[in-house]
Length: 251
Image (cartoon, rainbow, N blue to C red; front, side, top):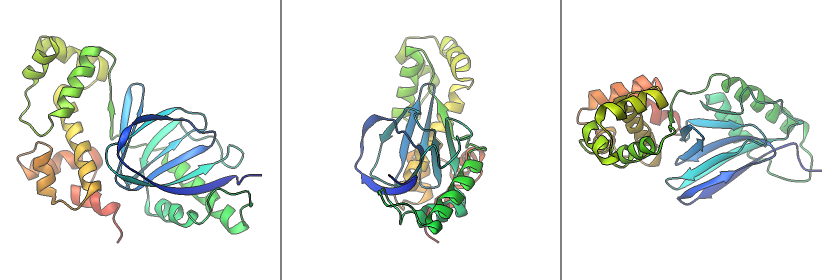
């Protein structure tokens, strides 16, 4: 009989989106690099400071924009209760990260868990299930219409440029007022708010990928002012870029 809970760690090269569906509750974490998760209407970025708790049987689309190492844990439906939500993305607490690291000693096996290991996995489930009750706001809605999808793609591809909304509207064949209405109706956000969020999410990828100075990251994602970048980053994540990077680096 397979273990009721187990951990595994793997390294993946950059690759296109693929569908993921497992019969266990899945705590998905990146120990380095970043993952992107997508489901209809929403997408999230998963750097090492964050985790996703995915309910057993819940389909999710995963893409790997950069090389990534994962340290994840699977719980059978008989070992852990149903998660608070089918999919929740949240910041990992220091306790949760320590428990994930300690659980890595027990991979998939037919050998049952020791009492100590079972207690560790039980504690990890308790901690992360509670964190999942307070999901992170750092996600991005994806919209419904083809025109809005194209506008989002153009914006994503030109984050580092001096991009104007009028140019995006012209590229998708809509008047600026019509495209602005699409953003409000389908996303509940203005284009400027979406651009700001995309730039912060790209910055999170860059901060997770290496040791580039924060100023360099700010310029790379389209900010000409470090103070404006810091303010936008703090507004979305609750931390400065330096604090965010430090949260998933070894102390």
